[in-house]
Amino acid sequence: MKILAISGSLRHDSYNRKALQIAKRMAQDLGADVTEADLKELNLPLYDGDIEAQGFPESVVKLRDVVTTADILLVASPEYNYSIPAGLKNALDWLSRQSNVLDGKVAIIFGASSGPFGTVRMQIDLRKVLADLNVFVLPQPQVHIPFAQNAFNDDGSLKDEKLHKRLKFLIEKSLRFAEKIKNL
Image (cartoon, rainbow, N blue to C red; front, side, top):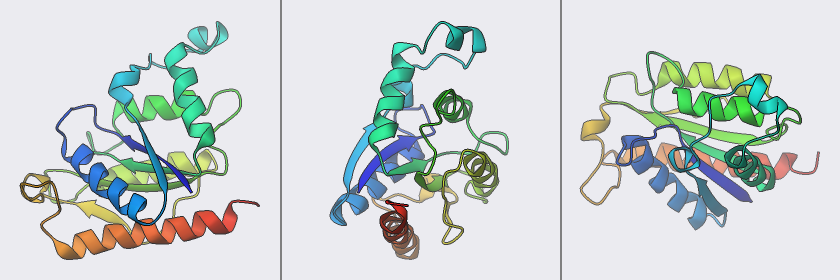
């Protein structure tokens, strides 16, 4: 399985980038081929129909190309103002235009935040958007990393072994699901 990893946080040393590195290693250990798209590095313009009418910008073409080759999106994202960060939502808007390159993909979503809810509200909104784009997201398990400022060891691993196991189970289950629907 080919996985494209994306952090919804643009901040270099964010909790979600740390969590994404853990998830990437887990997926690789399970035999997945994992690449990463850096939304900050891509520097996508804000979606604008006038820009789209002139053709996709180079950064959008790059993102669409790597999404097209992926079977699964692995998304670790923070929650900003109870919802999806603008950079991630903007990327989804560009990916859905003309031919929706997300159609039929599987997404693994999770997130870390410094608050007590650990991205629960963001994940609700992201699930709605992805469902509309015909992206499959398993309903369970859900992985939320609350109080992220205290969640990681110095080596970048998760302190909470139950949370680590839950994330691994989500990845395993999503890989199995993606394999089952790959040729539908």
